[in-house]
Image 1 (tube, rainbow, N blue to C red):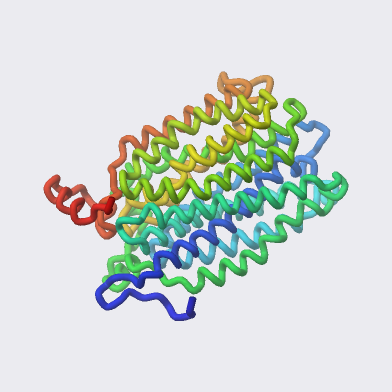
Image 2 (cartoon, one colour):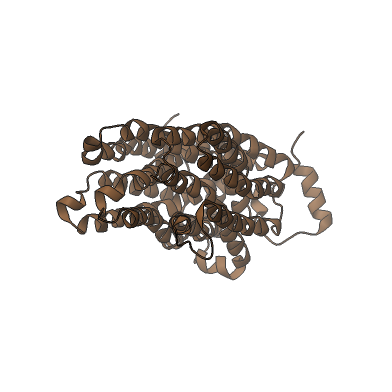
Length: 463
């Protein structure tokens, strides 16, 4: 890779390597972002209740610790409005660099925090503040990376290239979990004093590498053409809600599907290793590693399939199948059968959920024109992801003896997940199919049937 910027050729076509470079830049940034994000989730599930909260009431301390995981999701919609506007007005690359540095710095500082025993109630307050910064970063990361890879990709492979964003997310989760396995095995004295800090400090090196790679990537041709033609939206968010509010609502509801991964990776881990169930921490962490490793292979396969048969059918497989597998996974945990836990975890998160997870950057991004794409993706997804973030605390409430919203126990958690997935499936079932629409015409008004058939023939994907 050279230091020279990547430009379109004289005929308007991008150099052959540009889509790959954009996909790699999206991949490594997302890997870092979600390594940081899920390092926090693992620590919140296993450690933070004893480090930052009052353990005189262990159940309350655990609930407070899990609630801090959801705090970032509350901050994400706020960041989405700001970062989406900047990305549509000044470019996707600027946001990709900003979010990378913000996540890296805030994660490193979490590892430096004093504990509750050292500074009292200020410790959880500082933890929440840094968690909010993580949320602001995540608000723009996937929207900018997804927009960048989608707009650099060939029209007939947008699903495949934009899926690298989510492939990076899964890899970040794998690395986060792998690092926590030996950390969790430390003697408790070392774990609670310095051991839990190490994974947070390790993010510094990857931040530098990710910044170096992203700095060398050129802005997307679609955005550069808008700048050259003077067609960049003056107020992207205002235009978004004036002309695309239905699709923003649709993306928000569709993004409820993310509840599956937060329940699986955070709440189910905490529940399975609790005194009530008593499964081994290391084994449960390995379930997440193996399931996410399988997802690394499943994601590009599902994305390739969506380039051939459409986004909607692939997404709906994940949205309908995931809650079924969540019931099976939670049932396996309560059966204390490790083989069943691994089987249902791998099939549920690694394969079935990957159907929806792999193609949402293309599916959501294709709903919007380039003028408002980042705003639409950022705001829509982060409003929906907020539900996924607080689903962890909601699940903890449902699983308590008192229950919540008339639901109780792990079966109630399964029903809760199924309801949110049903909303997601309904939202996408009513969406337009866009996988054959030319990139420059995405987000525009529907065309006449005759013209649409002509364009589908022209842009059809080879068998």
